[in-house]
Image (cartoon, rainbow, N blue to C red; front, side, top):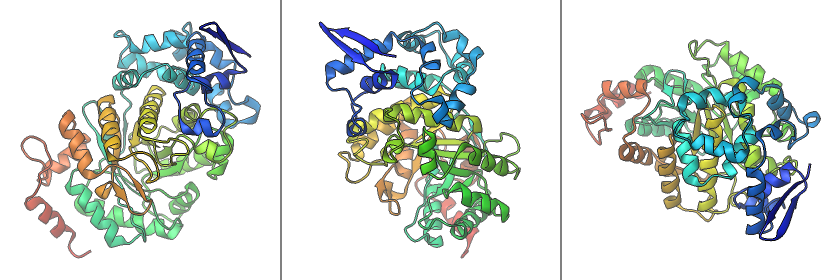
Length: 461
């Protein structure tokens, strides 16, 4: 179907919906690299006019990736909840934006709506929004999940403690974990990216973290971010697996590039759930995403990277994950060139994920060859804190010495909790108070006997 917009005496023609969506997207280097970006600012505005007038129902008929060619498209179409969609089914994309921003639309309505929103609808409305719109709507949405800690509650911000080490040295990883715990981090998960991705390394690291957790009685969960097939083997071997991790993308072909499909994810989910380590909530999956992953594997079908990112959230949604994390600036400047593009992408991803009902976190990060710096990350971290992000990363010194990229530190987590009056997950907050790591105002103590007592409790092990 062809889409047309007249602007200032010029007729702009868009060959199909995916072309219109790409042209309406705020400029970013990945779409330019793919030859999908608007040819001019005028064309971008024209595309937004046309997109604003598009009925939301059109997204159920005009598919950006063909149904017959892609299992992600089939998942989106076949799982769409028409009853949940009914309250907005008469709206255009522009009308949907106004509905989302209305004072009459609150957390209850947005939670009920989530199963009726397709990722393409979420992506489309985000393209019409300023940054403040993305923040204002995301802040209204509560998307909770739970394991040993409850994540996503209003007024709280959790942190993934990320103690990576370039040689997977156990003592180095343990030191980083203790450093993070002593600064109030680790309530989302203690999650390690292994330098050597194999079953034996993952086993050693999972047993290390589980031992620390049990000895210190820490209410948190652990994860080694190894491939899902390795985790299935770990489960078979009886290793203490809390969460199964996997990177996912928005097309079947891109997921094949990660070595997965929906059937494998279902197998892993069922196996992890069957361990019974999270009997109450059933949230046992950890997914990571990032704009540009489908393009980088040549699996984007001519669709812009932000729309495909939203489609990755459709992959995650049926599995009721504990954590979904967009690693927003990790792929590099070929896809998000500078701090401005990274900031915009982080706010888009958080908004779209929460609108689709997911417990969203953001790895506020950049690679060293991007035109960004830590001031940009401070800005994005603060904006996400205002927007109600579920969790962020805690990396020693904000510098991941294994993955070689820049993220947010334990100190950054303390900053954002302090300036916005946010607290850790309630179970983790109670543990921090119990071991003497919180002062009377609920802030992490800077020094004192609690640190020494924890170290003594661990001993030489």
